[in-house]
Image 1 (cartoon, rainbow, N blue to C red):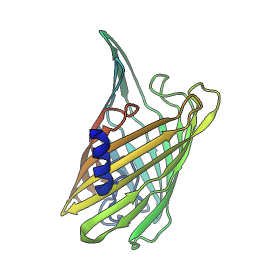
Image 2: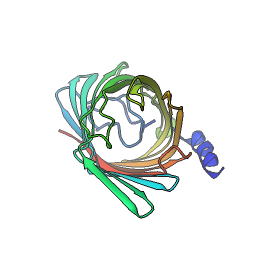
Image 3: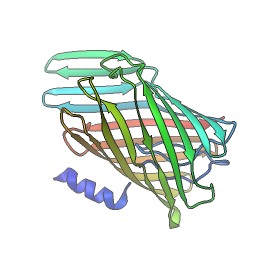
Length: 264
């Protein structure tokens, strides 16, 4: 009940990734922090790096605890035009630790490779920004870290500039995932709503995130309440951190991360 109350509170003051100023020709605009996306794209001819420096997730299921650690998680973005960019994301090393009673198992290796194309549909001056992000996941991770299947989807971030330096974002997403038994594919729906407030060079945000996985073996719902902060140290350099709290038993209990973004 406490978690549901927290979700209701965040729904009133929350929402996908941080909504930042559109465009980004002068000040960096990123898809982090948060679980959603932003509609802004990397300026043509430039390269942008967005990465976790630390990312830890804990999941408890019955008597089993699973800790997942990403040792950095870089995304490289290449500006193709004034409204489009190409993105590559992969964790160079990911470790999964599973503990049941006194028995601990560990598996580590490279993560899966995600390739995304972002096309912004609105002008940089528009107060409401919309983009399309088709993406594909290539199975570069070993089994136990990934599922060794090609998967993909489409995200449609919507960012709205509000008065008093507030911003509101939505990030609906539709995925086509491999079935757990490996013999078919099914739909996966994701959405988040994010409310941000900019105070000088600092932006604070609250987010409510949900996912519904329609695997034939059984539908799984996940929901989390997320808090985040970012600081633009220089026009082309941003630092950020966040914490995500699972609101039901199928969602990881907690996720903590910190990272930075820079444009070249």
